[in-house]
Length: 95
Image (cartoon, rainbow, N blue to C red; front, side, top):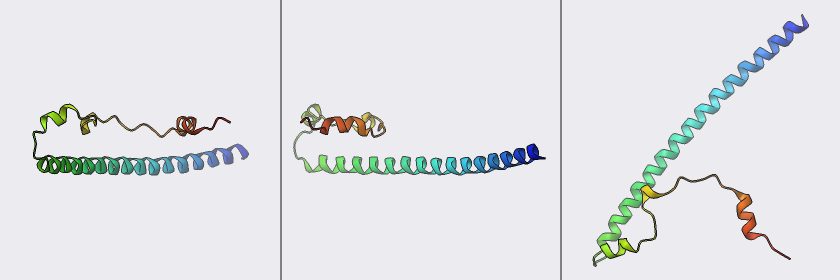
């Protein structure tokens, strides 16, 4: 009886864990979808601002593009997870 009760308890815990796992996966997918939509929206805003800037500049913009140090949107690297350890090295005081 004791072993059967342990098995029932473990099965119950497993079901709860599986349900929580499904819920977390759904939240993660929602967050990823929202993030992708926000990225697309921001890219559209940046492109619109770039168009506005080029229309405001009355000179030939070809020479500006050659000296442009800012990467274009499609050339941006994907964001890496924030690593506080590396940043702490930059601000550490040496007494």
